[in-house]
Image (cartoon, rainbow, N blue to C red; front, side, top):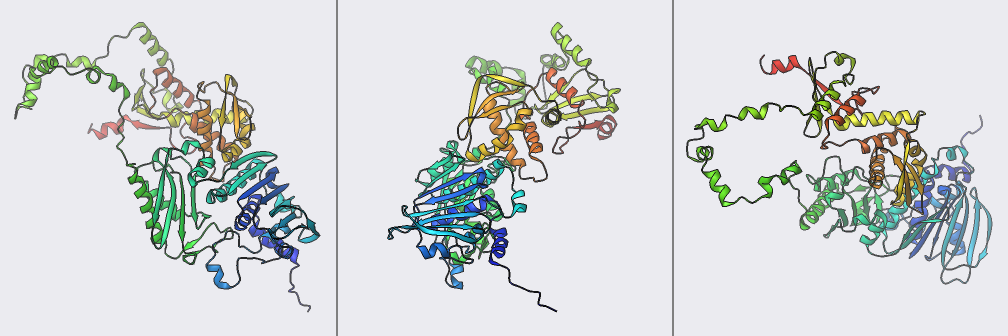
Length: 611
């Protein structure tokens, strides 16, 4: 029997290694940016074409490499960071993987130009599928420029798994932000298809966070800074009012390396306890510095998941640091009472309580009864209260009021078949500006107005994508909306589907869009706010992979446009809402499975009261 075990050729071994290291263009971006940081660069440029599928290029002004180092850097397990096994546990640099450049060269066509400061001329190397095609001297400034072209050109199956360009660009932007935020003293730029997306001048950490996440955080961040002999925690957290429905603006760095940690995130959420809603997420960019020997960063191929030697100490320290900062800046939870704003305009509130009024009240027998000791049970002169029944007897309806009642009684087709014959109500009642009560012969229905409207809108959008596009109302004065680069990449991906749903948006510059038209029921003047809230909700739904992009968009728009709980409705609006709800194919639940109404039987109510 011949021997069957054999060594893999280098190019195949490199492609297998690349499977762990280079999963998509963003993976290569991360490796190349980290190498540029380690090279001591003060300026780093990232240039991508076709979301990195055609070109990813990183240009830096770091220390560069010699001719021998340039050639060696593409060998498997080649690194300048590790010389013995102990070095693995004391790593302070960013890119130390060893097979990163070899993996990149195995799945793309690479061109490297590099030059050291003390050498008169640089080195140019061209590699194709792990094979060096060309090596020659080149004139250039100190630093390195590495370009990888046609990613996965020799592994078509892997290329087929890449997402759309806007989706892949979003991942690239995420990786770029994670490196750029950790090093605010370095200039970074990102150019996509010839258009500059980011231009980040060097400055303070706060300036870098505002440059990346948007100017709305400028005056709404709290500084965190705690130091001990064991570890330091510093950075910024957003004030409670900036909390969002998604985790997007949350960054943890350990020794300047971005990490994902549900454990530490829980610590921060605990610090915000009772200040924000359970379904809200605060913004934070927190940096933990501690001895590298206390951290194991080799537990995951991307180095984004790590293990601490003593997790409990880290957890307690982070939570304490954030709590201390929030308390220091007088950000404490407040009680939120639902007070009707109309109360503030009543005479009793707005007009002064004069001496004349005070003596008039004090002389009444009712006042005396409740202020004399042991007299609360005794009410004298009951004639003063003889008109109490008038509070509970409906006044005679005017002509207009009667017409409104007649219109409502005509709307008998809004209930499911099981209720239509039993419906007896000529009045709809709104409770707490959130629920609508509808009487039936067998009891009553309690409808949640926001849930009901979500179902109505969702089915309207469903009809639109199935061939009945929603009409767009052109804006008389088109509004521009400026987004963060990450959000702009998301919106670019959604533009065709949004047009079907009645939104006409056109790109205008790098991260700016012009809102040319919206659906007719979007209030003029609120278009910008509608787009921003829709994007926030879309990102919230994006954590669920089982739904398509279009499905997430429809759910996001339904949630964003629905009448919110706490909104007062007229009887006509309530009637229309209920008519539309029971015209839906699934009137009983929202797109996310929440009930739109619940039924209370009269028989059950009688039992509750012993009848």
